[in-house]
Image (cartoon, rainbow, N blue to C red; front, side, top):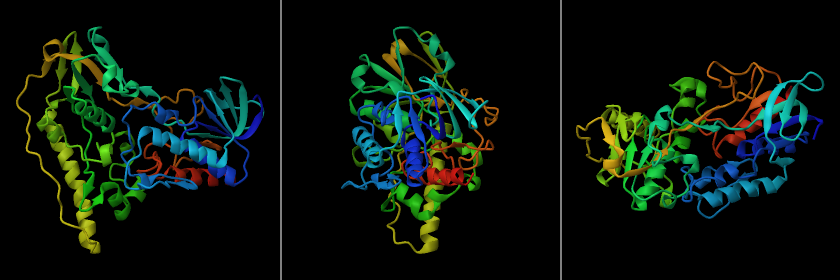
Length: 407
């Protein structure tokens, strides 16, 4: 390398490749740097991983889903193949195995200097498409657990067989946590789940997939500036939902009736003893209320617009937590493994530019930062609900590329 480029795209996932596609269409010189290989972000998911959004939402630029199951949910290997085929469709200027270690103002050519694992580059524009899943978020109390308890983060989970025999404790009830619980439960494992504040939504409602309702009602196009939660929505967990075996609703009360042992948030550990917050009932009620609000939005739209839709067929599961001690002995419960579904921490500390806020998160408006020539794409709720998904990442990439070409 060691040369000056017009544009460097950092990250070769669907966001970086979408940016590259639009730059290619405009004939603009650029290079895509990826510390791994195309499809790695998906290739490393667990064996039964699948999309939770229907296949028809896969709308990478110039490469929409073209399979025979638009209402289905692609499995892990099918997702990898889709991303690889997208890249092959336009042959991007892509370099694998290159890590960008530092981004800073250039002292010589171009606006920016990039210190990479191979060489130093200079560029007039940099588009960061590295996502927000940089560092697994492991609770501070994890080190207090006994050494003979197997501990892994969801990013390292592959299948139930990799875990020792015995019960499994899953910490965190967001989208990934609930899908891992589902996988373990279907394999016959005894599972304990620490329930947090993630909401839930139905898989299907009034004859349509919930994601289809998001598009019909216009919510999918709602910009973050108009979201009731504002920018805070970027840091909230995704509602739990499943695409497993054709898609299903995940209701924690139903899981409890099926034998999953639910607990409040895990707040501390001392040896074999783990301690929970007394918030299980509150968190379950909050998830139910979030679901009611979301389907009420659909009901209002149906009534206002005269949409033909069958009546609600949502199941209600009557399960309430008993009064339980706020601690549990791992040995007595037979728990041999702990899986942390506690999300990730962002790490943009390698960016030496005045673009990060007090929490280390980038400041931007639809990916355009206050630093001329610097952009972000592919982040959760960058602009809309689908910004971090196959669904709408291409739209944000197009917006950024148009701005880049005008600057």
